[in-house]
Image 1 (cartoon, rainbow, N blue to C red):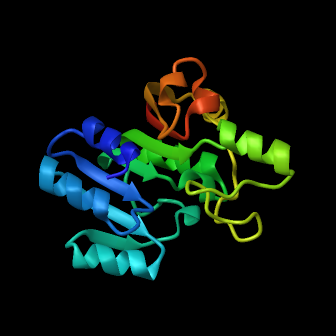
Image 2 (spheres, rainbow, N blue to C red):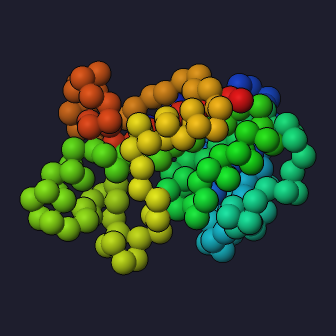
Length: 194
């Protein structure tokens, strides 16, 4: 499991009702079902992801998150997860509002576009960075809203959401995270409530 998924695992309570937005191949939901006995559902747009979820026995619905979450009642989930998807949304603020409407709490992870490697690559090469974390060129990337940890925290404040926990993950130079998480953190993991 990725480091952000390990942190998500530690935050999800046993037997919780969980909705995973952009669940991909369903690996996280399968793990949480096995280890935490959650009742989980996934929303996914890709056919390959949906097929993989079905093969894992995960309940999955084909759905474009930009269309909203109107088919779910208020507070119908204990936890709504959106892992590594926020930056691909056309209206991230609207998706966050919907997450908080249908869930008691939300867990959101996203790549930090303020990471030092991205800054360095842009400064030295004058081009958008391409890396293991961000493996696309500017013209074919699914990432349409680049944000940093600070950007996300300002958005949460503007939406009146309370950040109850934040973790920052980095594969290299992790010892520098306490010095400047927004510069040295590669991935943000937030748990928020109304």
